[in-house]
Image: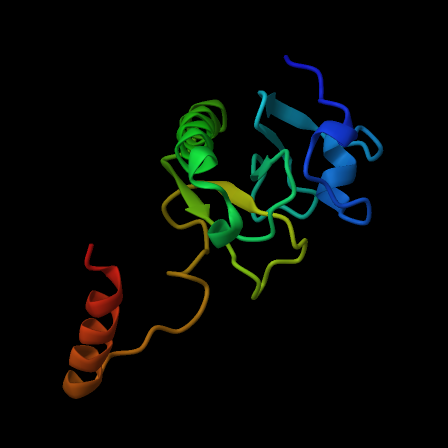
Length: 149
């Protein structure tokens, strides 16, 4: 496993818990590490095996990540999801990112949670709603106008 880079070479935030983990100042049960990311067991897991994959550099949200890290981080998330599923003998995984809302540590991280049928998690953890036809069309057009390249 690669050694953590010295904090002075990273975009870091001294008051950030995850930056402190990257710097080796706070202990964590690390399960994966490479030059750009670190994964460790969540201390308040949904289920045993629930991991957090973080960028070693301090970026608050997915939108803050530089383009050069997006692909490599998601390749690592894919690897970790496969590993968690296999090791925990799970039927699948739930992979999630919070951006600001519900983000208890303001440092980009990906949750990788082992899942089994009947494990008690429901949908996206909150009630889902239906669109009104007109509302769905308006949202569709607004998003489409901003995502066309």
